[in-house]
Image (tube, rainbow, N blue to C red; front, side, top):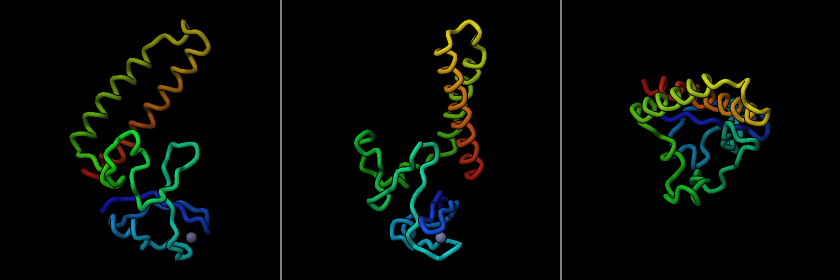
Length: 133
Ligand SMILES: [Zn+2]
């Protein structure tokens, strides 16, 4: 069963809950605290989390064009995750090797943000990968 990051609007708390795709799209997952079935999907990393209004349809449909359910789009194989991890890790190493002292202030900030973003991505991949292992 996949795990979902869900937020209860009543308690304001976030939970990582294991449930079937059907349970999630049909709102049959109760809040562990108050039992509310109005749990909202939390998208980590976005400044304001996006509410999924159409039963888990991909919010990036206009980009990905698939119209596939987000739950399906978010599933990757262990091999895909490992490959992405390798690629990101080598990018991170390259970024870390860059001599930040020779960059201008704005470029340095950009580099720092990139490094931070890569670390976040790597940590998430490791988490997901560990779940599949
Ligand atoms: Zn609640």
